[in-house]
Length: 93
Image 1 (cartoon, rainbow, N blue to C red):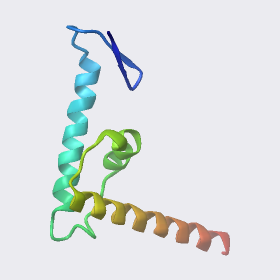
Image 2: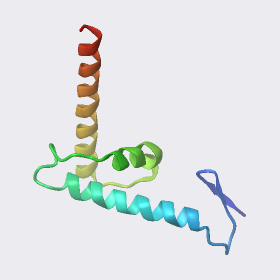
Image 3: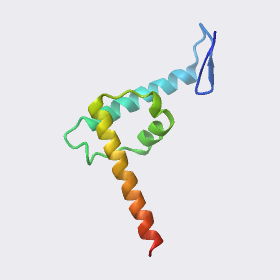
């Protein structure tokens, strides 16, 4: 039986190079985020655009330990708050 993963149909015994590349990129991103969030300066360490894009697309299948996940949520919420404030400031200029 085939399995569907992100609109990619997997057939038993057949290697899918595109899926392998995506999984490799996700693992790299996950490891980079873990490293950033476990550093002493996690609260000011920047996530790059690739990290944000990968989280947006595949965050539901990524796996982080509790500490990393809490810190990541905190960083993302802080950035959202900053963007909201910037948008409000622009609105009232």
